[in-house]
Length: 221
Image 1 (tube, rainbow, N blue to C red):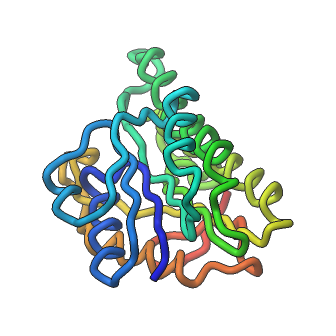
Image 2 (cartoon, rainbow, N blue to C red; image 1 turned 180 degrees about the horizontal axis):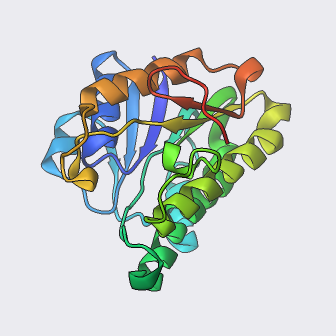
């Protein structure tokens, strides 16, 4: 039985990650702003009132978890606010996306990495939209930029944590049918979560700093 800490597991992919880890007998620490009935029903231990992009909020979380050891830390919390092109771009929304999607995993990594067990794992739910090589549409600036940025966060964390044998993985969950996509994605949240868990299970120091899809494919940076 492992201890899995997940940010943003109230719904969608994060909720399914929590459910599937709980179903296989793992302890889940659910880090949320406001808990929902769905995440509470999983039996996860809830840590509420946490804004992942806020240093003080995350520092309080770290104090609450100070006597715990985390086997797998999953940075799942994320937002998609602005889908426009340059002419109609909402810069405030872009800033918010960067704060949550890029700064959030960095803030969490700084505060909680000391609590990850040596030989443990850290995963970040990124996106294929953060791949510079695969960029094909001039829209969604904030989300795409924030996910490209968090890929670098993951790479830097992999270097920082390597002496403790903590492996780091960047993950593309697929185009998933969730609130974020307007339920238009062809991949279900349970399918995506199962694939992400397989990738995390397979992660080792030999594959640290990989950028992988839920289907097990390597992705270009």
